[in-house]
Image 1: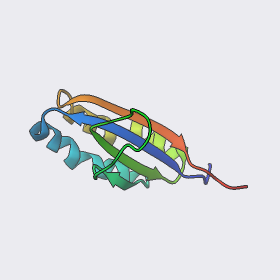
Image 2: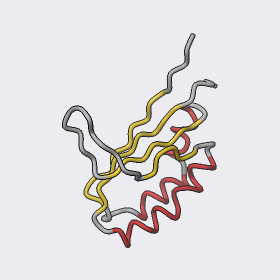
Image 3: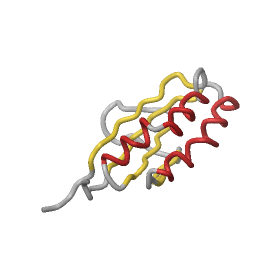
Image 4: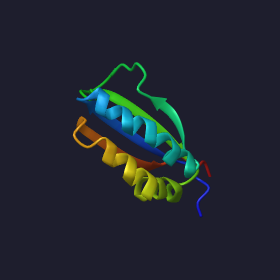
Length: 102
């Protein structure tokens, strides 16, 4: 198993904040169960170059790409995803392996 951390980069536009609360209550336990942690969770941001302008950004760190994939495809997060159905205009998730200097 890799010891290089991996990150989940998430962009979302919430359209029903009341319905989204159930997802926000369920997701943290699924993340923690795979060794993940929140680095960014919807804080203020500023696009300083380019035209990328998501409504909300979340960044998660996992111990490895394997653990990040286990989180995303796992039963707990699959259930959490169901809670946000119809509550967002978009919800994008990209998993990326971190930098490991040689």
